[in-house]
Length: 452
Ligand SMILES: Nc1ncnc2c1ncn2[C@@H]1O[C@H](COP(=O)(O)OP(=O)(O)OP(=O)(O)O)[C@@H](O)[C@H]1O
Ligand SMILES: [Mg+2]
Image (cartoon, rainbow, N blue to C red; front, side, top):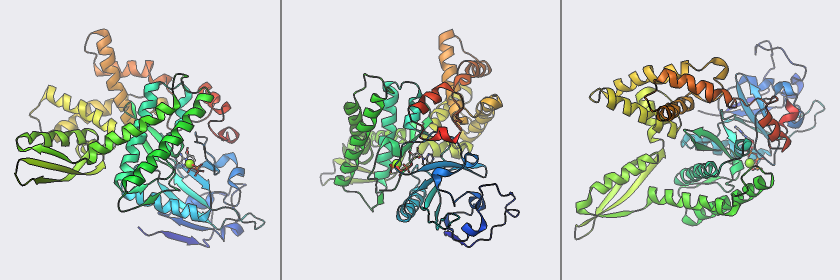
């Protein structure tokens, strides 16, 4: 795909199917706009680029939780989706835009770049800062918004594990981040754990390979930033007083090093221990990685095998689920759903073809669960997470009641006792919800309150 450059586009609101709003950009200021975008989103022209981002009227804005940032960032409606708009310098916007595109092509979890817009001026002709536009990552939460109830220690550990996995994946493809922190990461729920996405690529660079010095330096930045972020949360009373920010920040070093070693270490085996090669590969698959190739060398005596796996991007379970069912889920969700699918197959008809059995599981388990979620609750969690939670819930109540609870009963119980009480994560709209109000008062959601 080549970048499309739109210059001096005529502004025909009728043609765009919309009437101008009061604050819609007048044609005179659109003349100087320069939009670099991966795909054409004509609705971009409807946004009030002639106003400073801080002054954008609420009618354009989507009130969603936002992390802390130096730049002004706003969420705005664009057609049916939501975009994040960041005012910054042209150099930074272009660098970040191209970096995000490269990361996307390399299949790293990150926000999707939409456009860079320069040449903004006010009606009086005063120049305004360029902006970077990215697609709002649905169901994502900045880490501070995850702290609406006091965060439990093990949740914090899972958050840090997700951050470590993201860093390992970035380093494997040669990306040096340079500003690793919880606030430059977005989190999505992933079968009870979290999946981390890179949101701020401003300081990042791609290299053919990273030296261990570069990797260690990035890791050190992560440790220092996370310690600082946790101290902040502690001061704000948002985490358990028992949590030690420094010790917790050090967890990322261990988690990262363990993963890195598992993924890249060379191992030697005696010839008689060939099975260990398979075991290592299974462990890598468990972590969500595929082994594309591995070098096996025998030494002159011919008694040992050296294994050097060449790991490819995470997503082993994701890909298997997609291949079998067409469902697109996160890695842990996929692993959880596949477990259930495999168990169903083993229980019902172990001889049945894997694909046919998967199809039957989608029809008899996945779809009925998703369909039974009442419309008004369907924005609470994404479908794969709901199915995962229902399966967990079924297991939990079956154990409690000491009987095999049928799926339909488990779904109803889940809706009534769990889902109804969940916060809406599709588009955490700020209403009088007390948790969110408490966050707002703590300044956690930035200026979202003004927007509502
Ligand atoms: N596409 C997106 N989807 C969801 N949230 C986003 C998106 N883009 C930005 N954000 C939110 O806005 C916040 C600020 O964005 P970003 O980190 O890019 O700004 P910044 O000013 O460059 O930050 P820094 O202070 O680290 O330089 C993020 O922490 C995140 O919460
Ligand atoms: Mg940032």
